[in-house]
Length: 539
Ligand SMILES: Nc1ncnc2c1ncn2[C@@H]1O[C@H](COP(=O)(O)OP(=O)(O)OP(=O)(O)O)[C@@H](O)[C@H]1O
Image 1 (tube, rainbow, N blue to C red):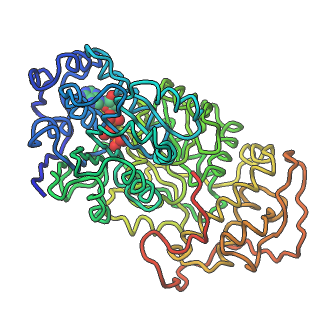
Image 2 (cartoon, rainbow, N blue to C red):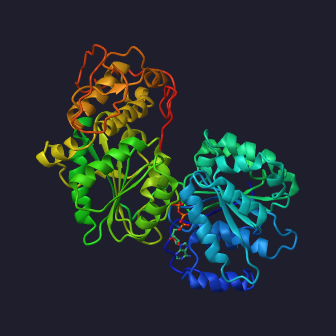
Image 3 (cartoon, rainbow, N blue to C red):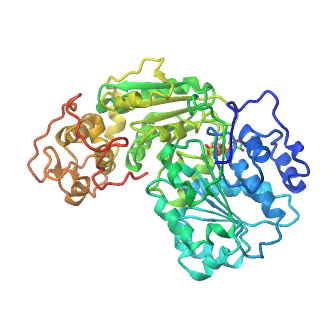
């Protein structure tokens, strides 16, 4: 490694104005930054622009959430493109990979703002799933996409065709935003596949990796995009927590999963008051179907405007909700990790996480949806007693007990709200919960029967289902729960009416007790929880 640059806070005593980069950055870029009202560089922007040996140095850059990393990677890449005359028209010079569609759109928007005042027009295209492939591809092939912001799946698809591959022959910069997630299992194979179809690293393109979190395990795979002598830039001290000191972080631990909805109502009420006149809250849930259920529940029981963002919604719905919540002055968004990383929603007052994050990094990125730039914010995680191991295994995170008393008593309004939600939504949420929690069975120190009992308790006592919701044999098999006592084998009800009762078609022996605590932990895989039973965490 060449060098490590470090500084610890975003608010510097003497921030450096962008004006000082006159001569180093194109006047059109400086004019754009002025129009965006970016007067001073954030520390990460300053480090990248002033401390690297050159704007074309391969680098790994770490800075806390919401500190302007997008501009920090766009500026060197765009400046180097503007001064280069080696990129023929129609060729992609800068490729930016993003884990989600929403983030890809956000990056493209910022890129367009930065290039708005250049003499030469720079086209920034996007490529991501869920959008009309043919239209986007045709505009990509016929246009001059100097910059492409893409999610790995759609880019892989583009690159499967030779004429599309040929558009990348003069590639100058490859950027991985949210680099740790892009280099993790799940994305890594796609990223490697994409890189095999692009010009080889020895052709000279620059690699840049950016994230707020850089777990050690990704360091082994960085060389897929970076030269071995890459520079490391960090604005986070080694001994400092990875979250902002100006975000108080709290935990609420409830006795069992049956208390989730009442506790969440009570918690949101407190956070709403903390947000004063304009509470703007994001609630992260673990899976799309659970998030959909929380949103349904709050639409019936809260006067806050409810927003919902998860992968099972159509792309136009996702795009519209993203735009609306960015513009909203107040409201409550229920979301999965579709917006867990990178998304910049102004003035979020509180982030609430319900249930287990997959790991400490995911927790950090979700908390980072509040307190962006120099603003304040709050964060609360709501866990059951069984899930509270997360707090013990992430002691580097400054999470304290919540300051207000949380009411978990059954209340008539919550029961009534739940009673009007259709059974199918509840069945899907139940199945999603079971699938998600199966992945944590070892860490929860639960046997399969106890896990099922816990999910059944959620269904009967919190969702007020008339019986254990049925699940398809295939789904149960994929979860690795075949033959486990307490499961109801059956088909999902097609009737969406809340009054329709489910008929169990096999004999059930139900146990609704809370799972035994402190039982013998199944030995085996370590961090992250072993054996996800073949189920994907559907965000
Ligand atoms: N120099 C600047 N001056 C003022 N505001 C800025 C500056 N640079 C970026 N911003 C604003 O800061 C906010 C956060 O920026 P950005 O989304 O790039 O953060 P990030 O570090 O990439 O966050 P994350 O880790 O969550 O991806 C955005 O609203 C952006 O417009």
